[in-house]
Image (cartoon, rainbow, N blue to C red; front, side, top):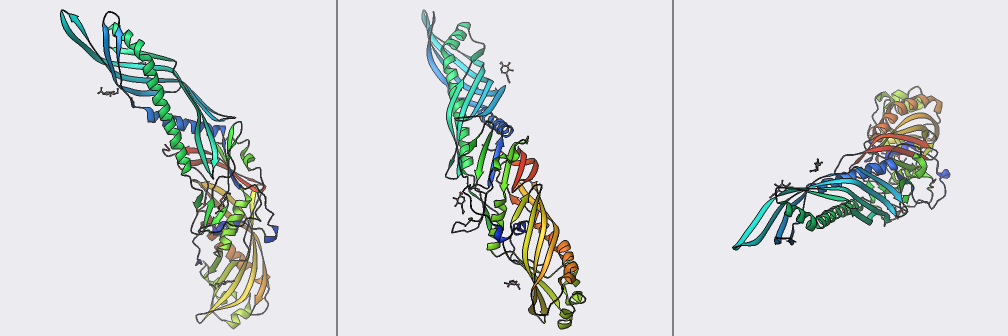
Length: 491
Ligand SMILES: *[C@@H]1O[C@H](CO)[C@@H](O)[C@H](O)[C@H]1NC(C)=O
Ligand SMILES: *[C@@H]1O[C@H](CO)[C@@H](O)[C@H](O)[C@H]1NC(C)=O
Ligand SMILES: *[C@@H]1O[C@H](CO)[C@@H](O)[C@H](O)[C@H]1NC(C)=O
Ligand SMILES: *[C@@H]1O[C@H](CO)[C@@H](O)[C@H](O)[C@H]1NC(C)=O
């Protein structure tokens, strides 16, 4: 079968969805039709990734040298240089993330930091003549009971998420220095004189790296698109609307979520699209990391965009049972057609007569397609429209997750036929019912399903992939409750 100007995956998504034009509902001001809820489990997951990223950016890390002159009893002024101070390892024994009034709080505590360094000292003394004495060696340093706490603010900044550091604190409980070699007076001097400095160098670098990590995470969020292009006809508007909602144990993010035509100059008119609300609660009670809710409006807007683009048109000139596309195959059902155009090829020109809309019901998706099918006879290379049948198709749809795409499939439930006009006289629709059934079942449905399998993108941050998703159909709402895995380096 040939497809007329169909570049898109999504046209046929629409076949899923149908509601007649007069059931289009009034406007609401709830501008969000997709919402994403990150549960406590999801937050914990993100926190662990963040922590790992920060730790791996810190190890190994060379800290600035420390140099100073220390006064040692009986010896005098000793010049000391600590160099190659390197953080080798960090272990965090416990950490949590929680949502508070002021933002997202992350605390890592009981952390152990292992460092190594080179030490060198020199001084001059008098034994009858001035003598220059120096020594060097290595030392290992262990920091225990380190605590790093931070509070992050999260807000909507012109449609993208802005993440920023609101509070930061770092505290080291104890520092142990172990010298390989060196005199005992030096050891005590080192501990007394340098402990504070080592502590502050460690604190400064950890805080610097953590802040850098937050900035990088923020710039990652800034690069999230406001639109995901689906094909040359449509994009999904993923602009964030409203401030993120910080609950006790979840963050809710609301996204415009409607389809818009590509190269759109004017903002589309969604007056008739109604959002049903309560989407954030859709995955309540689920033990998954995130919940993505799609309002029926998402599907209606998708259907509108493709319908308005004029691409919902389909010329069928090849089918598995090609005899269906010859007047000879209609000999017994529409004899006058065969008599007028014996053994001529037939093309079916199917177009949607109104924009289809999906209805999401409890436990399933209902779709109704209103289409017109023009029967064209090809007689000596001339295409002659001979009749037009209005076909109303009801189908049930279901979706599943493949990667980060929502893919669909439909099953034909029922259809009705009525003759709109005819140049070959009246003929009984009941006669062509079985021809139509066979066509819809063996040609149209598999075709639609092969398109639907290509899917439609869900707004997921790069690097994350959905896993073990559950799909829930709730009255007017489709919810994807899922865990995610991290497959990429984010920072
Ligand atoms: C600096 O410290 C690192 C890590 O302990 C070590 O591998 C390296 O050899 C040291 N460099 C010098 C010049 O001592
Ligand atoms: C850190 O250093 C301490 C003392 O040198 C050592 O006992 C411990 O095993 C080290 N930890 C790691 C993770 O290397
Ligand atoms: C996308 O959504 C935002 C927020 O609702 C809206 O302001 C903007 O006009 C939308 N873009 C298009 C092209 O419709
Ligand atoms: C199919 O039918 C529509 C109207 O129903 C018409 O605009 C279009 O030109 C026809 N296409 C072909 C290829 O016949």
